[in-house]
Image 1 (cartoon, protein in one colour):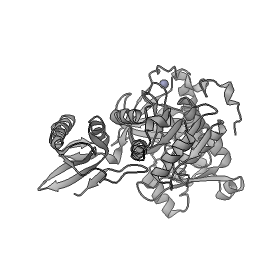
Image 2 (image 1 turned 90 degrees about the vertical axis):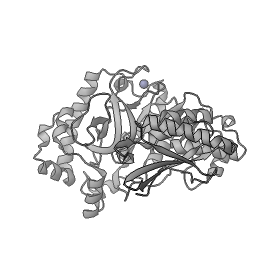
Image 3 (image 1 turned 180 degrees about the vertical axis):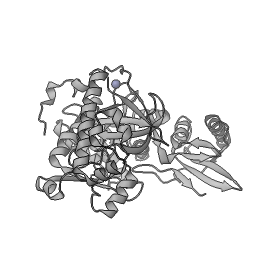
Image 4 (image 1 turned 60 degrees about the vertical axis):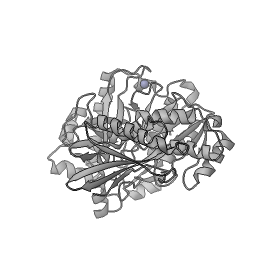
Length: 450
Ligand SMILES: [Zn+2]
């Protein structure tokens, strides 16, 4: 493990790559992609079979552009491979016994979209890549030795929480793991007792926690949180603003992306909040046509494909199709970094096509968050009425809103939705306050009755 003294890197954990010119970054990535192609072909039966089936020679992959010849990996394929060849589906590049011998780190996907997929690497690789990446992530948000972090991710076989706890400790911070199975009320009490400077959770739960604090007599602004780092769901602008207002942190809401399958591929916003910086010496993030395989241009929406560039023990992060819809830019950021920035728009399977219109829940969420007098939670109910699909947004009014105002808010929201979705009629329905179940983890707001 890298034992650098962090205080010798003021303000920038990894300046050499963060501020390198694009040609230099590309040269580093070309060399690493070529090496990874040979490595996964030689050491993983899963990839050897895929390359052979596609008549693709690893020796022909000399850089990033050549990846167009390589088949994609997907989570569905990992599931099939792991059920046919348990437990790792031919993805391991070293024997399980060797990895256990040196002390291993085992992790799984969160299981929110089906049977979890499992992974294994040595402790050495875990610290060298994943914890290193997480240290850089925390550093970019302005966290420094001596800071205090409350983390609401679970410490289970899901990797994200472990990386944060280990990185925070490595950086000389104090971390409070407040994930499951604590109640929200207990978590609020701990925030008041320990007064951490930073909280890390999903966007939905950041809002929920502020709501629980208020319900239990704590003013969230008086809890002195300075920074909120959110991950696990896309972050529409309206939600970002709602979180900033709920906690009184103004510009210090940082969006953070991590993906278990691709060695936790971590990226983070800087203080400019204009896309998440990719750690480009550790991960290659490409964006391709969601229905095909060709790369899309800078600024266009497509599906994010990740290649972990320093993963040797298991080949789960090679040319991996994430199912996340994203855009990228390589323009230099106002913060001085030159690394690629990505914006995650939605999960691909979160999109529903209603009467020919593509509807993302984040677009609806953003409108709701900008509307006064409605609570943060909502549901999106899809039904078939005759031969047509109907979308109803189910909302709660804020407790002090009188019923005479319901109608004008309903009308306003229906007009806003119609405008946002090219004329599509969206119904708005109120239920009593505190009726809709809240999410402690990743939110899933679609109720598809079709
Ligand atoms: Zn930046």
